[in-house]
Figure 1 (cartoon, rainbow, N blue to C red):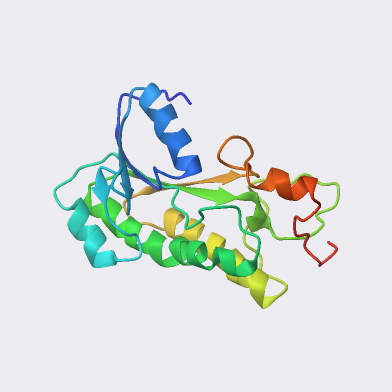
Figure 2 (cartoon, helix red, strand yellow):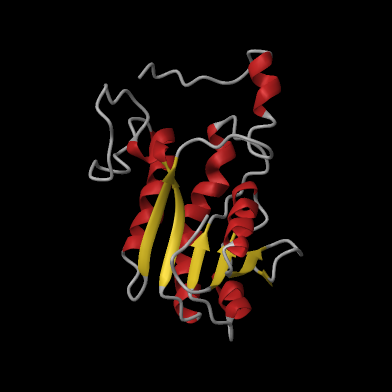
Length: 199
């Protein structure tokens, strides 16, 4: 990862996660100072995004140019809808709290990780989707709507944060060491769950 800007001070929520570790490494290699934010002891700032008051106390007195939200509640790939509930909460309440923390730290930019799944779970035909296509359409079932609402809200909070430049990075599926290791045995045994909506 390279940047065209001078060195920045960056607060990275989710720095100890699979994606966060890669982000922290790339940003550090590019000359930026990265401070991890999370519940574990390996983070420079220890706080839970779901605890607004504790989060604001933890960042009090710190200054960052950019805040990145790459936090999830996933310790392994989700196999059921309920495996995503805590991450859905982080996308909504956790993002709202982190926006407040970003303002308190004097940040100018707020970056969130998002997912291509926010375009909806279905057949989009042979047309390529672009950023101009609607993101986060209503889910066709209550279970899907719960996840889509989380993705939709996370982006809305980033883009609508007053005084902050909001950016959403809509990733596809992750694969590689630390990200898909647990999926390989399931694929080999043909035990990976498949959505039943048939597009």
